[in-house]
Image 1 (cartoon, one colour):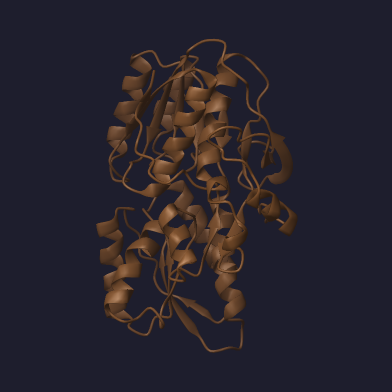
Image 2 (cartoon, one colour):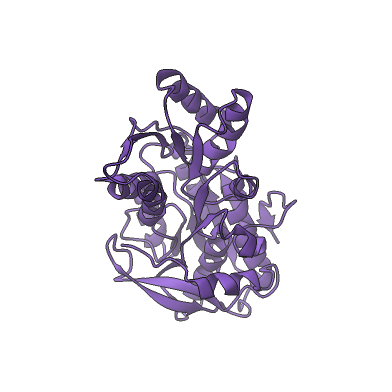
Length: 354
């Protein structure tokens, strides 16, 4: 599945878009059909959420962690939409991608506490299937946000194709180093092994660089904590000092900036991320990071919350939907409204809405 990149007209619209803290909709998105398929067809859809929920439902939100700005952005999305819709929200985070058992336990606790719906940013593509099945069997809808799960028992997906995110990142490099040109070594850091979004991004990236002069080193998998990613980057710089690029998670790119600066390598090694965070956005502005696709994580969080309420109330909803993907680099970042793709500066984690 390949989602369409934004046109110049769409980018221009983003540049003049209002702050999503207020009226974030109607929003131009992509619906995937058949729903939940990995190779479905993406088509344009204008997403408009409910004005208000009929009741103050209890919505449980489960995240892998809150250690980086990406999940902070998703938190902003679910929090603000819960407030706008007038529902209660309880957000739990497991502490990292190694904590699958803890995420399962937290979801079970949410259900036991009376959650009307559960929104899950999954640690594992397959590892949550049993708890999702048990939750759905109790008549509680489960919404898959951001990361992706293989469970057939979910009610909806609010996410983008990380295959496409990885593909667009690889394509950026392949176009700079086409077949026949000098080889370019790339250190590749796709994230925690086993996570659905990581495997999808890895597949897309590898597919995009096929036939080019890009030589991808052995993928370095690891948790998306800064220390873990920094260690992986250091290992690559030591084992392959002639590397030309470091590409991977947003945390990888953010952490590597300081390391390259300390070692005087900023002009020799390029940085790319396959998704957007505030740190990556700033890095592109400053010329430290070359490019990154934007998946508008705030909107994914907002849509997931709206899907949950619609399902509870038995109203029509789009089963599988996500924002359009577009690549941000130094050429177009000046034309974008930051609020269109990221949470506002200064936003702090919110774990409950009453």
